[in-house]
Image (cartoon, rainbow, N blue to C red; front, side):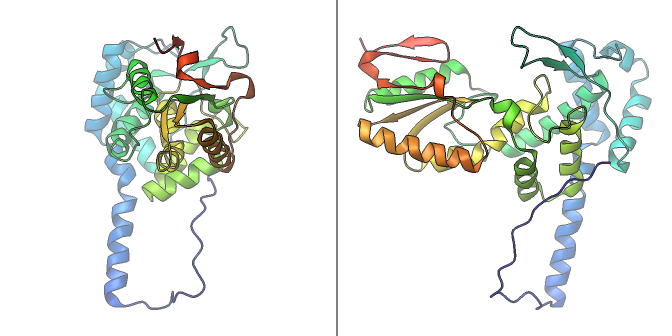
Length: 300
C-alpha cells in the first residue's frame, strides 16, 4: 500500500522527553493498542454487511466493472470476507473509476465500483458518528437533519440584528483540498496510520495531483466538512457565519466590522491552502438584497 507522510507536532526542546517510568510505558502501550485496532473496528464483517444493505436499497449505478449490488450479493458472505481480509491485511486495491463528463468539463463526476462503494460507505458510517459531535453548528452541508433551507433560515435570522452581509464562495474547493494538510488533520484526530493511509490511498488512486476530493466519492462530503472544521470554529469565535459546503455567509453590525471579518477569513483560508472566488463574492446589506444558495433574499 502506498505510504504517505504524516506530520506530527514537534516536541518542544525545553520539555523533558526521557523520563520513562513503568506506568508511562504501560499507558503508552495501552494507547498504541487501541489506536492500532481502529481499522479493525471500522471494517468488521457486521459493518461491511450493514453497508451492503444500505447500498443495496439505494441501487447505485454500476462502476466500470459493471458489477451491481445484486451480483455482489449472490455470493455475499464470501465477497465480504475477502474484502475484509484485503482491507485488514493492507492489500486492498480500488477498481478504476468510471468518468462521466458534465457541462463543466473541469468538474467531471466519477462513479466507483460497488465493491469500493462498500469500503467508502463503511468508513463514512463509522467516522460520521464520531465526527458529528465535533462539527460546528455553523456548517449545514452533508449533515443529518440539516439542509440548505436550514442554512438559509439561519442567515435570515441573523440578518434581523446584523444587517451587513458578505456572501463568499471558496474557489475550486473540491479540486484544491491539500492531501498533505488533510493527512495531518486525519492523523491528529484518528491517531491510526493504517486508517489514514487507506483513506489517502483511496483519494490518490487514479489521481496523481496529491490534492482534491473526487466528485462522486461517498467519502468526499464527509472529508470536506472535516477539512473545514477548524476554519468553522475559528470564524465562529468572533463572528456570525453560516457555511454550506464551499458557500458561506458572514453577517456583521457594520461595514467596517464586516471588512475585518473578511480579512480574517482570507487569512484562515490561506493557511488551509484555499482561496476566495473573487467573481462570486457579494458584500451588501439585507435591505438591498442578496443571493444565497440559489435564492434571492431582501428585507421587506
